[in-house]
Length: 403
Image 1 (spheres, helix red, strand yellow):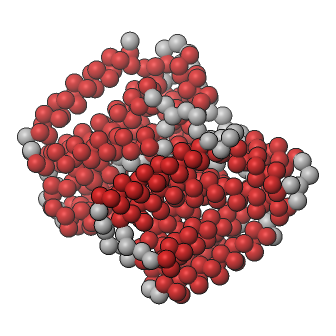
Image 2 (image 1 turned 180 degrees about the vertical axis):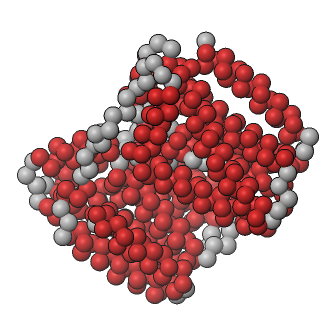
Image 3 (image 1 turned 120 degrees about the horizontal axis):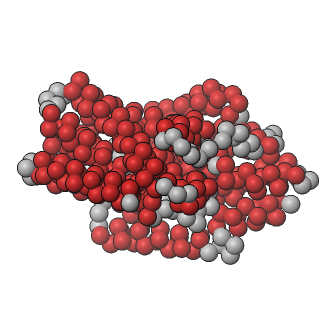
């Protein structure tokens, strides 16, 4: 039973013949070898590596478990007779393998290539991955008592930060991992099942305002999207503290570029195939969708940029009108490019929602904005030119959407 369940979910995540796995591992090896032979080295403290791998793995594992794309398979499996413990551990094991091999593997390859490590630290990083997988699954299984899971996660992060001793941290993760396994041992398969929301994402017909209702209804049905936006706002609050140590006011455009990395709101068509089909086939929906969608992303980006500027003014001061104009430019530019990517190059062929969040395409717009942010401080005259370019681009965008 355990083998059959694991194989069913593995074929969904890795492909019918597991063809996705060799490709992913090949990319990880190429990234590791490229960085290693380049000789690029960064000094990273051991507890920082542990924290990076643990939080990243736990976050991806949580996304994988909470993905609504598993509802169909779970419904079919739970309708059949099953052994409770075998089902739970096979399901968690397959999602954990997917998380570690396809997502954390790339981060693991980068850390191994750019930092010094020994065999003991290597074993410790592997232990971190396994621990994060089981802990994320255990916290999800008791999500009804969310405050318990929150305190548990906060306690582990605090212990990693303040213990300082690698042996003690490793022992803590081992004991805590066994405790998470014990919780899963007592869990049932239904703790991972979530009913599809009954809220309808109705496609607008007459009033354009209904599209805005769709946006906010969609966000209200996907609390993780709202959480990601809240995290970006927290990043906007603390980012001035880090950037002011680099190069003063010239790094403010870098902050705007970093804050454009809000993946969930930029994949609306990719994550909802029914919406994409309706938008593309119903008459007159191109301009009705693209223009409000661009404004929606712009407002989300602008909210983060405003928080960033206010935080910078409070901590450092010196905000000018030109910097506010720069915030408008970067927010609008990233919004326009994100909508154009979604319209012309939507992500298809994904298995679960986590594939969308970590698709390489998510870095196209932020990297472009980062390169532009590096060019603006070196040539201050470039900003007014870019603002004029934005005006022209907006006109072209409206024309393409309207015709």
